[in-house]
Amino acid sequence: MEFLKIFFWVSLFIIFYSYLGYGILLFLIIKIRRVFGLAKKFEGNKEYEPEVTLFVTAFNEKDFLDQKVKNSKSLNYPQDKVTQIWVTDGSNDGTPELLKKYDGVEVYHKDGRAGKIAAMNRGVKFVKTPIVIFSDANTDLGKNSIKEIVRLFRNPKVGCVSGEKRIYSKDADSAAGAGEGMYWKYESQLKKWDAELYSVVGAAGELFAIRTELWQEVEKDTLLDDFMISLRVAMSGYTIQYNPEAYAIETASANVKEELKRKVRISAGGIQSVVRLRTLLNFFKYGTLSFQYISHRVLRWTLTPLLLLLIIPINFVLAQNEGLFSLGLFNVLFWGQILFYAAALLGWFLENRQIRLKILFIPYYFFIMNLSVFLGFGRYIKGNQSVNWERAKRDVQAEAVA
Image (tube, rainbow, N blue to C red; front, side):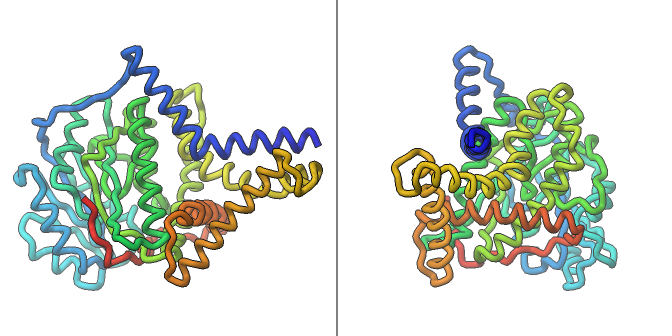
């Protein structure tokens, strides 16, 4: 029984640390560093305007082309210093032909679909500018995004800069929309603190940039290209910085089913990344970066979801030892877990009937996030996750929030 108690409390601590404790610890470290004048914050030079390449890979994205190209040309950055490169490998809906009608857009196309990362590996060879900015075809960029993202490269120690992912919302969000939006707001704050401590651990694929010279060709079966590209830049001795003033905005997944499909792929890619970046687990070699990587990423993709599952029966045994309906601590914790997952189940039930209570979206989305890890692990083990991204259906009726 003593072993079960120790295992339970250690497990509970790891779960708490993964989702909230690390954020609290980061906050305290940052506050202490500021008090003692040790804070590291590089604002950059807003007048720094190097030539850049806006790089987009697109597969059958004709519905987004006009909006994306117009958005890119309207950004507050000297247009004579911006090269647009689109790689449209495998597209058969007229995407490459339509793109060629726009002035100032370089289109590289070949028949046959080999996946996004294969298109990126091929397309980066055509980049001639010192900085390459990656973005998705179905996202709009904020007016000052290029200016805000490149100014941090004034610091020679910065090898990658991540922008912020934002989600369009509407008055009656679905569980997917509200959950995804809340998740990214929390992640955004963690990234700010990560960057101030040392380095962000992974960039958002919707908008991130690297020094072109630091590009490393990525394995053709890679699932999380943005994560692998940015972390390998950090492993080369540079930092990944974060600027929320550079942002990409897109609609949320149409529903939880579509969001789960997206999360399962991300989870499979996360596990793949942990395996391939296993040297980054070495504290003696990577120090602070390893600490941030394990705390912010590895635990969520590996140990924590498993512990969430295991502590339920263990807690039941400990609660039964106290008497299931007593007011003992293990009883309170056990019924607290039951109540939490019951709220998640109720959220699912109401969502399917178009009845939306935002208070239930957090437990519902949390459950979906961790379920996706188990499903993603299954896909990774079986090796049946295609590198060809099947885009999740998006909510086309969302309205932007300023």
